[in-house]
Length: 315
Image 1 (cartoon, rainbow, N blue to C red):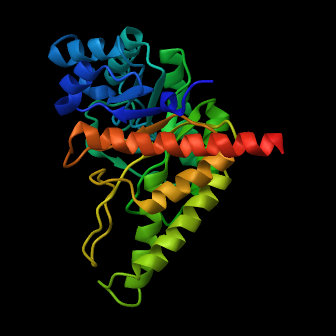
Image 2: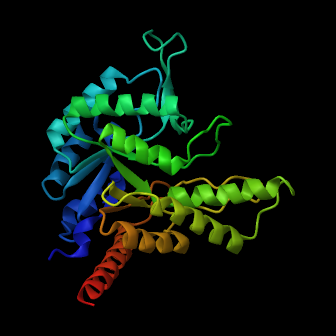
């Protein structure tokens, strides 16, 4: 039986590259990179990725496909992604259930603009039709299924008709893709809902943190328990920074993983079983040892789940 370390990866960031090449850690299960950082036809970044690929499985995680765009996909972007996939042969390819690309003159016209951010989708049948069609176009081009990630969203639409989890589950079924489940995003969204609810009565006042965390945990678990087994192909874990009382919490991947997120992770494993798990850290990057320690905690959670599952099967 493989160790649970084989299911755990970290995001590859340039300051850690040489340490990872030197350590050649046999424990890490995979490295994940942002696809767009390696779209050039050559150069030192791609050379490093080729070296990493010889040591670790690579997962490609994109931020620029704009899968929910009614203006359609950027053909040049998709071509560059296809070339990278062919070169790296990643274990997974993923992007977000969001949009960023808009063509003011219409979907078939030149002059598209890109928001350089991950903007939330309206949870409507029409929006889902666009998302499914774009996912299928990507999968046809790459000749493989992809994963779509749930978003940390700082706004919602009045015309939402479908619960987010139902929207994503239906999308995965229709498009034949899988879900990349970001548990930190679920908790951050719940905390921000608690803030907005408090601000309706007392603007600028922060809700009781313990109560907000309890509610965010419950909402995250409701989301997780609504996902069918086998649909999630990867889990993301990350940390967030508490914001000022009058500000929303931003999913900035700048801290160690919050205890509430670890609690949700343990319950997620109980529902979905073992799933490849990534530790994300993008801002205020710590020494590599800190990321490896977070990866160790994820491996421990997986091992504990495996032991409990084996015990139940014996009983």
